[in-house]
Image (cartoon, rainbow, N blue to C red; front, side, top):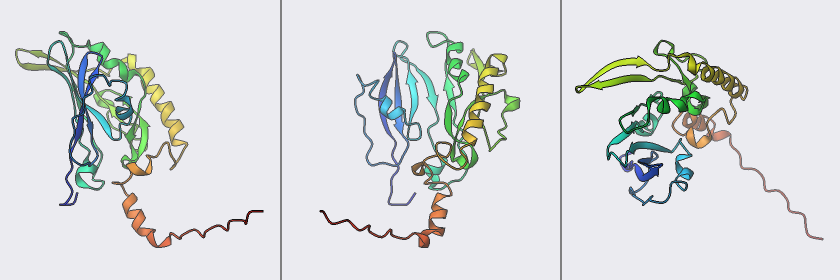
Length: 228
């Protein structure tokens, strides 16, 4: 990031089924804005449906008036201005006592959603829910592994953890992840397995552009036939 550039996170209040949340634009932009989103749950899908740029930063219970979810939204490449390593996003979710049950929170991970990351942080790959013992990506630096540690809060202390994905009920999700990984790897260096160019700005793409800069040529203008 240059000294003349200011990086600001834009954010917007997002009401989600009784749990208002906060969505953030993680790209460098101009002045921050706080648009009203009282009636715009479905309209906000336009933005949060693009996770490479917009992410859910937090979720709050409207009935308890307490924060229920917090996620990390920082991107190392956006902070450093170049590829300096992979991101390891973290999410903390409170369960029970007026908030979603533990089983409800874990249910989304029974499906192999794809996310940007994997080799050099430049490819789409399915997320695999695994135990802590299996949390070591291998194939093409993936598939991206997700672990879930459960704690009980007792007298202000965290009791645990319990390895929540160390359970056969997620075996099918893991098998599905391998199938999706097979499908994506067959694409080789092409999209949709590889991230689109605009998401490769902070990877090795900038270096390749410099190396090939003098090889690009302007295409000749095609002759336009005279009208008859």
